[in-house]
Length: 142
Image 1 (tube, one colour):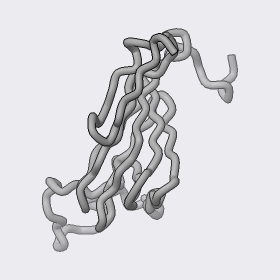
Image 2: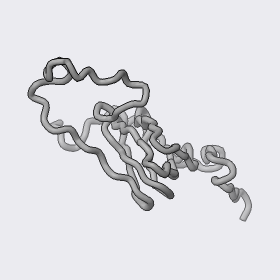
Image 3: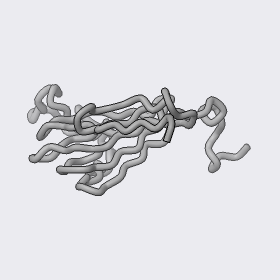
């Protein structure tokens, strides 16, 4: 099979398939989050597909995620000082376990936080054609 490349992602981590493939796949690799650590994944100009291969964690909207570097909560503050008074219940996020897939379409983002055993996931990055970036969604009137 001329042109075929076999790569051990456990040893190498990530590869750029754009050197061989003409399609939208631009990055693939295994990522590891240590226990309790977080990372933000943003679909700005690209889309992402994630597949949990080991461990567990949580995918949350960025505004709900508690970052390790965030300042401590002020428990003496009035309830409306830190968030809108009409705020509804916060989205608890999506539990991630081995075998869970997450797809981030263009313009979306999430914060991944590893559970107590850490989390490993396969991460694919796909380019988005320029015309798809500028077109409106199918739910909006033309």
